[in-house]
Length: 356
Image (cartoon, rainbow, N blue to C red):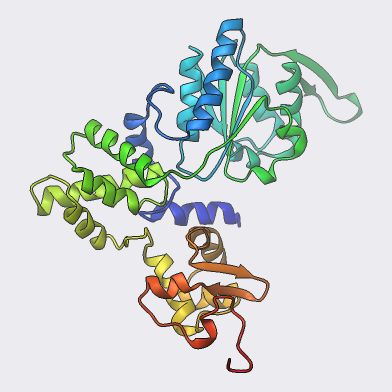
């Protein structure tokens, strides 16, 4: 079983999951900005990328290969399309898991046009033989196609037109150094600030013809986990609520009421997140407790708890991973409105043996 596929599927089923389902992909296509000036957030990345693309256009050359890393839903695919648009070039989109053999990659590379942008999503999940073929393609714009098998096999060099590879990854640490080093520009995308998400929400609401107040946008932004994809998804669900149970205008009260129905609390936690925290606090006194035990208590696979729920809880300072197990922080007790036992008041999971 591929646990990456399992956790991706679980994440896509959650309203606050950062993975994109088919509905998200369809809506994102309509909402996606077309150039760097229209792209909201990621100021440093935009400035640096703008310099790279302007310089390439001035030289009349293809842009350097670009590696975009960061959590899902932050705009890596959007930036790849903007790169192609800024360079006035076509774009080819594929993903690492779809390339299981070197021949798959060779077929794609050999059909590229000069200057074309090849977007390779989840590049860290590409097979090793294809990865090794990509080294030569990126550096020398050439691949060796193996014809035949065994001692009679022959390598036929195939020249490639200059192209720009845009790789996207959620786990940059899994990329081998030889591959990372072949990218001319590397950018790490950060989570968005609430004010940036408010701008994203207002822009999306305008494109979706939804009337929303600044307080309504702020309420949705505060529950969006710093991720534009989640902000747009929450906006659509709040829009539905406003159309059915109100006058169609999204205010703070309407947004809060809608997201209460969908079980997304004021901090962006959903049923799974709160289930993990409640089990940790109510059943295990705040920990420390092992991951497997915690997963059983929640009724989920350990990989789901570790890969889907925990990253956001850790980032929010509600849960800590320690050598002894998972430990709740004082902020977790406060968020759920519970009083921590005296031994948990220090927040480090250590029992007070002397009662002091």
